[in-house]
Image (tube, rainbow, N blue to C red):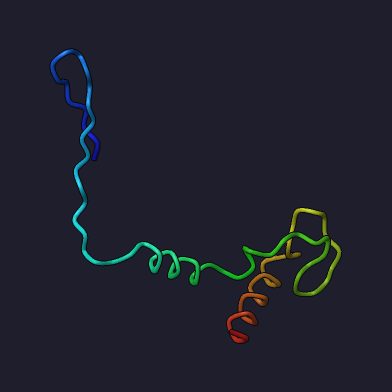
Length: 79
């Protein structure tokens, strides 16, 4: 939390309360979040479904939910 404090002469100084250090780093928490995200979110659109190769527009990655779910399931087994 940052607080502004007025001192003599109209100068404003900021003070910052320090957060208690519980000994945990932020990076492992990010790794847990990244591991829980589906692998399909990192895939670029390629003009066809990543699972069944059905032609698609240049924005979509999968033709439907069934292919997206099947891709996630297969990715989970191949880790």
